[in-house]
Image (cartoon, rainbow, N blue to C red; front, side, top):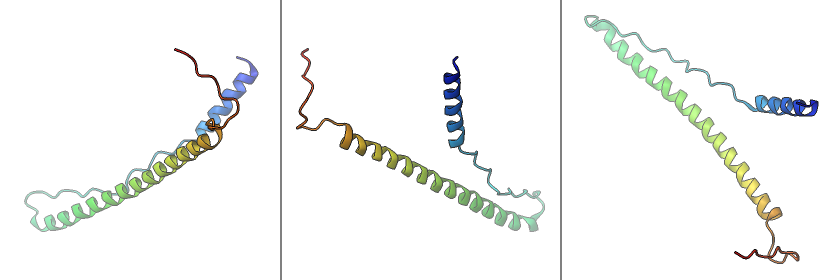
Length: 105
């Protein structure tokens, strides 16, 4: 491989790595510990802790879905910007003086 080819590969690799996202952190939610069957007084606390654990997981999920939606909207906006550029700058207008001749089948 030539030096120019190697340099190009390294540059592309650097750009791809710079754009990579970090892995999302695990939720900071602690699951409750289930009490034994005969520990009736702790069961009410356990049920409350289960509700809080579920709420924590739901908050985590909602936050990450919101981030995902924002990324998707940004990606779709970039595609629309590209499509607008193509429509405005690359499509051959009807009155273009040098239209290619249609090829016969």
